[in-house]
Structure formats: C-alpha cells, structure tokens
Length: 225
Image 1 (tube, rainbow, N blue to C red):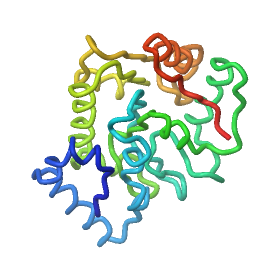
Image 2: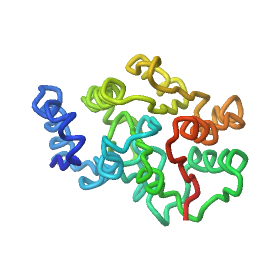
Image 3: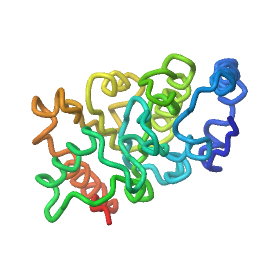
Image 4: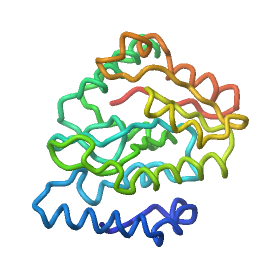
C-alpha cells in the first residue's frame, strides 16, 4: 500500500504511519494480494476522501462503514460509486431523501459524490479497503484505529464541524467527538432495512445547510450534475 496523503492531512496524521498497527495493516494487505484477493477500491483511490477534502477544508463529515465490494463501485468515498455504476440501495435512498429535503433536487444519472467532497464534505468509511465480494473482510485489521484517529483529529483541532451519523455503527463514533464544539446530526441508516424507520424524513441535508448558514459558512450544493 503506497500512501499518498494530501499534505494538510499528512501534517495531522503523519505519526500514524509509523505505528505498529499500520505496519501490520500494510502486511495484511500485501498478503491478501499474494493470496490472489482482489481489493477495492484500487490503490490510487484508497485515500480519495482525503485528497478531495483537505483537512483545512473539512466542514461536514459523513461516516460510512465499509467500501462497496462490487466491481467498479468503490472509489474511496463513503456511499459514493463511480460514474456509470448502478446505485446501491443505500445510495438510492439517500437520493430519495434529498428529493424531499432539498428543493429542486432530482436524482442524478450517476452516483459519484465527488462534488460534495470538493465542497468540504469528508466522506469517510471506517475501513478503507475490502475484498471483492466479501463485505467486512478488512474490518479489525487496523483501519478502524486509523479512521478513529482521523475523527479525533478533526474533533480536537477544528470547531463547528457537522458530523452526520447514520445508524448504530456511525453513532458509536460519537465518543470521539467533542459535542460541546461540534454539531451532530443522527438518524437511522439509509439501508433498506432501516430507511423507513427513521432515515426518511430526517432531513440531514437541509439541517446541515441551516447550521452552515447560521455559522456564516457557504452552504453545500447537494445537487449532482
């Protein structure tokens, strides 16, 4: 795993790459490849969330769990898929909620959420890699330690960040967030298993923009071309 981290993130997280857990994670990934496993996303996209949303630009954090494990789906942003790829169920429900939450929003033809990332929405998965067709296969190998440090760094070094926590897994990360100086928006997960019991109608996108507006910050344009 070659680490090409955007420079402002490297200043904040540089010490993590020398720690034992990261060395073991690298060894795990190398061994997976040796065993013939296909790993998603491709190497150049693993740290895409950090590339598209430098540390200094972070305004909103949307936490996911695992990258998608189907061919050509994952590209390093939580919930996002590459252009030309069919929408996974959770993403379909995110767009459905956006249609009722943001005036004028229409479900786009592609599910690439890079435009959000470029506006300061850090789309962070807890694990940054996965084996093809094997959900959760890289959990508890070190990625969670790394991404928990990312959340802590944002919490410690920044103010008035909006954390969007969908579902139990993401909400467990609240323990790393100083809620006295940051904003938490939480609801059920957009998965088909829970969307109808608390995700639909939760209006996370307009709530985010309302907070940004009150802070005097530029609101997020959630529309995707």
